Length: 291
Image (cartoon, rainbow, N blue to C red):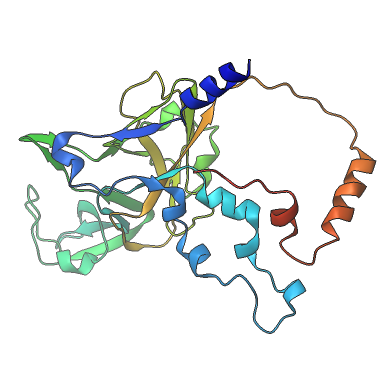
């Protein structure tokens, strides 16, 4: 029995996740990384203690292990190309007779005055702002051995429908889709959760989160998203920005029970916590994550 256990331990392998891409792209893309290598900038820069406070009361979120675990578990896929977002007002442009002959969105409508847009046989002499705002997303395209490789596409709103709360955002019904250049593969029995990077609010992209059985589904998984911003202007999310958080997990069936709390166990836990001034959860209850 003992020899058998030793044999099983020797043969045991850590679960593996792979990110596969095309040969033409392998050296051109920023590669996925462990999440602890792409923590939110604000979290990396914040100090563990507040200045001019007693050590017992000075701890910041930097010393909160549950938050640290949230931002460091799993893997981050960086944005593979610059993403440009233009949010603009729409305008009706009129000719010399005061007739509306052209409607367009623009950040600088005055630049169109005196011009004659293509297929419009009128010179634009004035404009009036419309109530609606417009939005435009732009990413470059890959050259895949002479074939076009798009990086993003539209996504039909009716696939989520008017009951979806995304509509509360100004452009929540303008669904877009990042075309993922990576195929994600996990060990047998493991799936992945696809989510927004934990505690990272550095841009105004909101993903539609998902779970995929990546041990059997060998295919590109694309990422629908919406723009949650409100301001008018031109914005660029740079290549390399942490954009997708991948968390592998082992598929298991769980039981659930709803019951009254264990008062004695709660008192015991709080008594144990009270024996230390700081780093209480970390030093008394937390389990170090293995890499």
